[in-house]
Length: 429
Image (cartoon, rainbow, N blue to C red; front, side, top):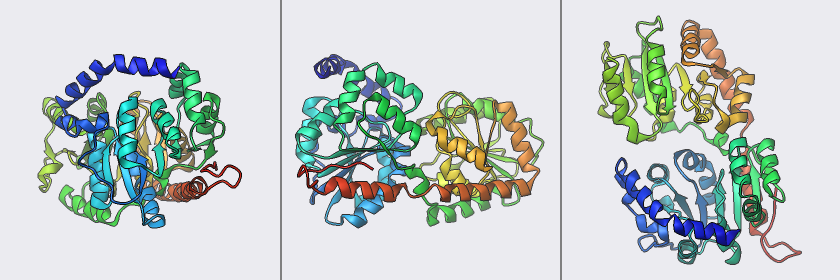
């Protein structure tokens, strides 16, 4: 199966190049460092032994933060290399870690590109976050004796069905992993059904992210700019098609001093959402202008990167985007950790267990439509005690599920220590 997979990849090479150029129309950053996507890394040079961690985009990069810090503390003689697939993920890595880590794009899964990556960096250990199964990369790591682990792994029913179409290839790739640690029992079960010999359960790294002190301070400043006497509704990480529904619903809420802060998930959509606000007749301001919000302003467009914790700190109620329409939902854990009542739409399969547990804990409520969201928001705005109770439930819920980073570090101790029986890395949790 692997030669068929690789042949198809080479046949798709013109499309891959076209896709890069097409994405660059909206995000010119896609054409920067393009050589890295094909295994050329002349501008990135490791000075110490490398531990490599792959985080596709923004969410995975933010989730990696406690793990990166733990790796740096436990293995100070190593450099951490953070790889990404998207410019926004790379920018988030730079914002979070600066020069403390190396960063580059992971190459596309062509054998020559993967070889170039491994020969240049020669990592002593590789960690893939969440759902990243690249057959040629995995085979090359095995051939180069680089232990490769899949951690914080999640696999929805939809993704499992997609991988099952290539059952032999998926199974062979999973069995070549040095270790697999899933977020939940359901994720582990699906991975094993695909062919993983064993998948342990570690929990979710996102629970280990504490609200940074500087973001809490920025949240206080934002609240002063928004108007401390106003009620703040945050629509966080919204996806295409959701903003119009949310804004239409908010117009029917009887709260004259309500300020809606809407933060699109993808920065390339900031201007499109601004145009939508103009078409719908909203008086709005851009966060990037960093000006006090006027009393007649009803919406703030959160067109900034890396400030989500600050937005949560400044709001009274948070709706988690990607859940109103079938996108699978975005991360609700940060809102819970910040102690804010959370509203979720019906589509949360990307965070299925976390969403279900948050609702059970009383930290979140689920709605079926934008109209129901507006009704729930109206109820919460009128009931400060309920907001306080849900916020405290969110903090408690987040604390109860912490500890994934420690479990991953314990797993790495096994993987990086020689097995007495085999004399090479190995281990599962």
